[in-house]
Length: 184
Image (cartoon, rainbow, N blue to C red; front, side, top):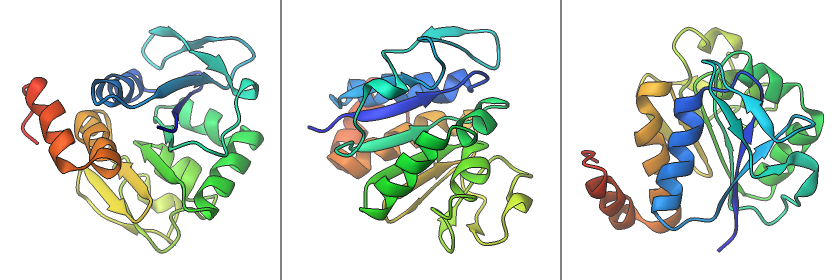
């Protein structure tokens, strides 16, 4: 199974990032957390420091299953400012690779890269005004072809389970949800 990468930048939303790691690993998916900082330690938006599995430059993302972006401010803007990550996201999407973003990241990272242009997507409420080229919805999670988006921290579990369902099927996602006592 190909590895999925969850990118961490200073100011990332802890609930969104760590919920994805936890749920995807419960499903048996290979998940690696990636610091875009020069060091492995990444400071979350609410004072939780996480030690990532690897540094950005130590990976080849061409065979990734998922590239996952948590939100948070200034986490999402920090991700958007990382040119190599933006190049990897564009290339991954161009070859039909799976991309997921939640909270601020759909509007701050994916929309400017044209990854969600003309697609159905959701983001943190109020950030939709950042891009008129996206068909913004108001559901907690949206799926449009190879892209999954979520609207914020409260949707983190549903967002992660949707990623699992897109990779391993609805039954596997329901199994993981049941073990977590989450209605899916």
